[in-house]
Image (cartoon, rainbow, N blue to C red; front, side, top):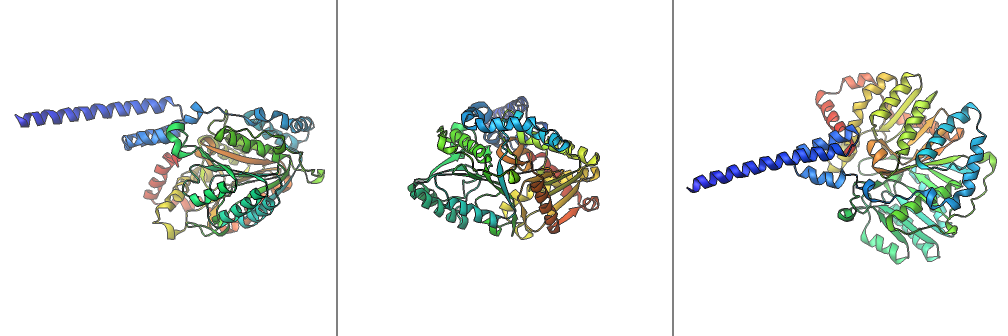
Length: 502
């Protein structure tokens, strides 16, 4: 009798497990399909929940659902600070009316696109200085921080309490004690393991205010853990500002665990663009703690810049709560409208289909397309678990190489170390420097910022740096791809399917 009861219980359990599994598969399939993500992301999530039963459900709740679009009240900079930016807006209108030549027509395209997609104001009077290495960049940053008189606003994805972090902290603490207002924004995920409690305590004790942007520990109340604030910006006294690809970490000067050298690019500004960057910081600050930073002292009259050194600059900002993915559309437009040449540097190359098709089309149309990305980490770190977070995107990128090469693109893998810069030069007349990688996550899920520089000299400098970096690269050819084993190709193709999650 007991054997019969046990048999019935086993059958009941099997039936219950069958029904539960069926409901799980059908339910998760409907939820993911109805979310209307891009096809590649949809497929990646379906495979995740199928092959990781129930664990996949938690992962999807944590990282897949677009909670940000559902919950946050998005504040646009131009709505918050219209009165402060009015003089710049008026200058922009006059500048656009004067556009006439072919080159002017070419730059009018991205100007208009950014106006329509992210309400980005074109600033005309700016002094710009490019930095191509972390050591020079951070030395200049330290000098400018030490010269601050009114306020310092800094926003970084990763901020480590290492040697560089301690040096910057000491400067900030000293300035705070002098009466300078210091505010910092850290990304919740990027700084989760990188900053000690003692470091944070020393900031608070000095009167420095800081906010954790999208704190992952508050996931169950905010649901924002899948979104990263990947921006790296600095505003000093509303006069001097920086945009860069570098995080606040010593490895961007001396190299890190997986790469012995890091190559990155940043730009220093003086002029009107500093006010625009202040609106970006103030918006992120408001969305972190609901405090307005709209005091007039945060928007002083810009420093005068002579006409012969003035550079028109426009900010491209995007995030998961944007009406449009402005940086993605900007990149697409720049590629398809380029007439002669394109130089792109990005640590990762995992484009969506539209960007991949744009690059192919440009190359097939006669435009010289040059792509440079970082190579895999040092072989010595092959068996270190953390290195796979860097290797996986590098492997996934290889699945795009054949179609790019067949179209006529040139591809370079940077072997000296970690190529972390995100730069672009188009036709020798305009360039971009910023934080946005050439991958799906950066286009759609992360808060990013790129500075568009409408200046031939700066475009030429970025192109020249690209050619200089070629000495530390190996060019990929179709012949190289033929030597890749089937197992490696399979590995790369599997990672490509999951690339929206990388």
